[in-house]
Image (cartoon, rainbow, N blue to C red):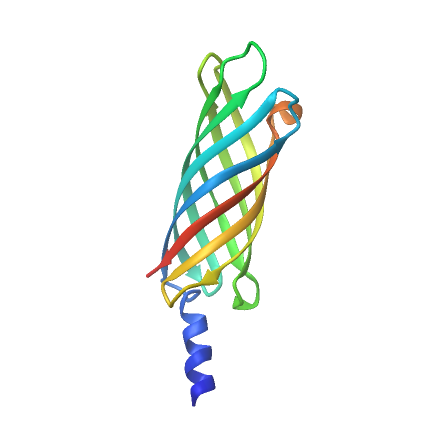
Length: 159
């Protein structure tokens, strides 16, 4: 009976109809651009489980990037949407999204990124999790200067 209760509780976060909200810190980016030194970002994500273990999400984010040299620092605003799949409902997940990014502060560049991500949910209780992830933003229109690998850590809320 205890095993049935634990198993049922583990599946509840990933059931169809569950809503999801997340706030994340992003950064530690390793971009292909030699001028980029430091990036710090904030993201807000909202999602909905359309099927067991399958979530559709939307994300809004802001990044500040310190640029070495004469160039100005860059402030990025982005909006993304995508899908997340929880593997075997154990907390490990795969994301695939598409992101529109506008770079300001002296530059006026608009990028479209393909964004695969792998992460894990460490559950603090039935509704709250800590979610570290590694992501790759593959810039489709400025690949050499716009693509980056990074680390994201967030707090997820399931209700």
